[in-house]
Length: 387
Image 1 (cartoon, one colour):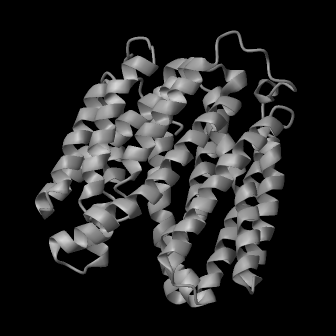
Image 2 (cartoon, one colour):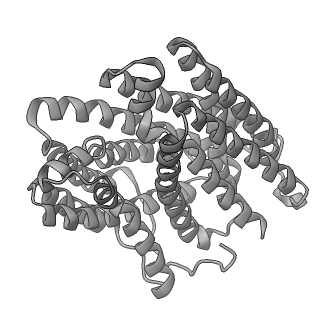
Image 3 (cartoon, one colour):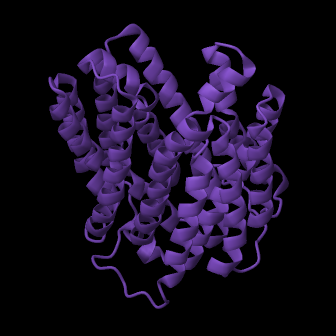
């Protein structure tokens, strides 16, 4: 297994480990601490996002002087030990403090994304981004499945033991990779002076904020909306419908690999997303499934295009620092959408997030040519067989 493939596999392991408990925090807090308020779960998830937003720029600065793979050995060790501490945490306040400390160290694995991209030729960026996008999609789905199985057969706090094992396994992989690193893969001790203006990066940040806010607005209450519209109480079916965007991401990656087709223009992909969200707002099960397909395709294509823009506008020496800026605004959009979704649903009903999300997608498409100046899209190369 080559270095790049090992790093992508480690990213998948990190996503699976870190998302195991995300869908089940309401059950966890209720059974472990007797805390049943939905507002508490929302506040905790928002705190996780804010922690990652603040921690990643710090790790990006540290990575200027310490190789990312070497850094991950120690951060994943700390994350694993704090995971085990969460297992024994006896009060809610103690759990909050320890678990958010754990998230600080866990968030360092996001450095693998810009590091993998720095190893790639520019012509391979789009396909690598697509591969990583699919890895994240299905890693999150598999993490939720594993978390659900653990919760079904073991005590809720046992999830943290499994998560710690994932951290220690990542640490072991990093230790092995450190001996395989070629000399040219080691970063310079100081970040080289950038020759261009940094304002294009910040304009892209604003576009990312709007896109992520609009795209994630529909997620918090989708399962409730689907079960109400379909008039079924079938968890497996609900999970399948919820996972449709992940399947569309895999389909998009496969089609790009098979056909080598030209990358879809961002405004066109956004328009498909607008149609998909409006279809879902109708409340008919068939239209919801069709809308999920269009929405999933749009999310994949736009995410890949915007991430590719980051690496077009940045330089390899600045990838980690610029990605930390982008990630901050992505997380800010997700946090904002979580709070906005609750307020919108409580005031206007379960369908309104789809309408507001569609309006946000349309606004993103209109803002794109104003905020970002790019070159013409290029033909998508085939994925390297090593991935």
